[in-house]
Image (cartoon, rainbow, N blue to C red; front, side, top):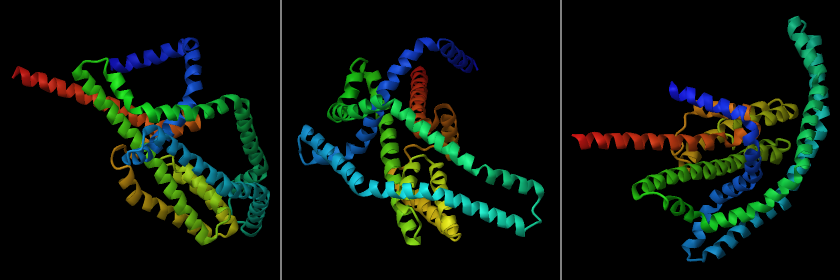
Length: 355
């Protein structure tokens, strides 16, 4: 109870004195983007780095080879995948007014031929159909505002993108020196404890980042194959959208399937069934075969806990909070569990010594 009161007092103190911490937050935010971007690439390219070093290739040469692989992958995406996604997205945006008209005609037909619908339902349907253009306008304005905000920060974004390769280079070059550098300031016993904690954190981050991105990639491929088989329009763009949103644990698949269901329904009502089957099959393959072998049980987080953390982080920090909620929570949980286990072990050792 006292601990909770102290935490609330600390939060209150920070909120009152936010003018002191605001410059610090701005400084951290300025360097957070390149550090996070480089950190994600670091954990993704670590296996490739170790693969090159297994053949006794010098570390600097291995880093250069890793950068070449990244550039080749980016080049292939821009040359062969991005034009398809761009064209399909443009065609989809151009077809939205036609989809809206079809939906309005269908609802109007339903109103004329099925008079047994309650007046409240008809009123709700009319309000929705009449407001469809305004809803679309709101969405477009939100997207334009979001893009304008990005353009306003274009210098910082470009600077962050430019800095990512430098951070990544030094992470790959000197990443293994971080733990010895930190532990050298402590006694041998405390250094061993801190070394164990840092290894656990590294294991959690490696498991989540590598596992979640590999799983998302495989799910995207499975969705693309399924969409191609049923002949779904905009299949590449929808599969890529599903690949990106699947990075969000548990909630990602529901976000991914929504536009596919809507577009499939306008193309052919039977696609509602086929798209649902494809998503269920992809998630079953992912949850039963891919995730257990790639991510294992390292995170060991209950689904309800993950959903709660994601929703809370989304309300606090928006989409960025949703993306980083689970790894942040997993790291905090690992730290707390580690120190709790250390406390229990030390207490047990003292009791054994007294006996």
